[in-house]
Length: 567
Ligand code: FES
Image (tube, rainbow, N blue to C red):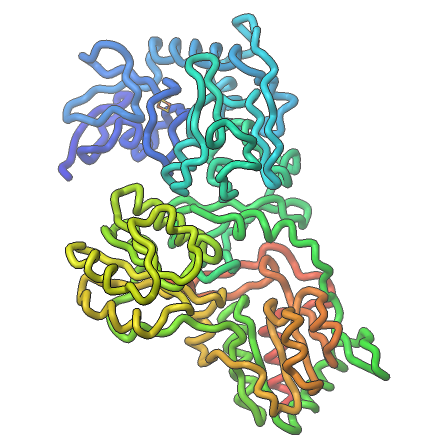
């Protein structure tokens, strides 16, 4: 890329060839108004808000799609440009229902901002628009066509970010409407509820069902943290007000997913209404009764001093907690293990990052269901397929990725995949705990062009294994079990404990909690602080978004207190 010198609003600007006028202006701190443009999406050039005057060029140019050129002289707020912008805005306000005072986005709407910026204080044209439908068939968000300005951000987000291609537009001109699939209700469509469309919508056309009318931008608090709903570790922007979760957004330009989230990261945790454990409890005369922390920890410490112990952790927690858990069982007669299975080590090749999926020309999915469990990986595979990558699935059961795959074969036909990958340049093998050893051995043949991504079910599996925890089942020999983490709520575990003394450290009430001898309340995902190691091996910050309820203590602090009691 070579340097290009141009002048924008009289200011000398150095840009890179290939950049747009908009990008050059933004990097020089010059604010050019936009509506259809979004930094996470390809430029569309449809709304005409970003029109600028370029000396010597006939007509106004859309700065979001026009490339810079050496010696260019650009005026971003010339009379002609401002006049056209006002005209465009007047038409937009005439086309559909933009009575801002009744809209949940009022105060945070890009269209409204433009109206203020260009002094629109009345409706210039008659407003003969029809009342358009509102589609509330989705659980987490609503589409109100009356507020839509047809900027296509949602359509592009669905295609470019999630590669799901659910959203499109029907009809032409003033009849144009966003539609899901072939114009069916959003809730019946192929939408995967990733929420990318919702996050890029510049008006109140796509409405978050939970946070609507919950607070304007100036009223809310943003906290950046790391998602722990699966092992990918996407970066989250958690929005809160009055100690209440309002919504979760992705963070554009963040690692590893570039702002793409899935329904598990963005929506589901906000709708978790399970009953919390908010006080330590000890079993007395056959009944679990609330106790103080000192009493509960004293009982656990005494118990751990005698007999043999087994600690089993679910790893939906921080590295600090998992380390403390390992340390605790280093102090007693016993062992610590991990409740979740771990994908086997391949034993050769280099580990891939998520971005390697996008660069690959051949992707093999073996024994893994990313679209169900690590959905963002699945969406990245879809994106790669859109870019021309060939997909092969090796499975003995159904796999949603088969729809986009060139071939789906059983384990016995792995050789077919190896032959098909022979002329590829970059092959990524995506696998999970279901990887068969025959397949594992077969891919060695592809040599250096193979990289791999192992998808383990444990949410902080890399942090757990780095801390020395290995997968284990209740060993049947322990006189006491200590179960930690949200997976510890699995009721089937209770039966495997043979009635031994059981300590459960968990966030929510469950059959396992109700059957325990001591219960230690634990924080939930947005109350924890520390670090997690994501799928790429990066240690990411987990920030406390909201305070813990009174009576709950951080699990790492509780484990440290137990270690002290054992000294
Ligand atoms: Fe450039 Fe819409 S932002 S045309």
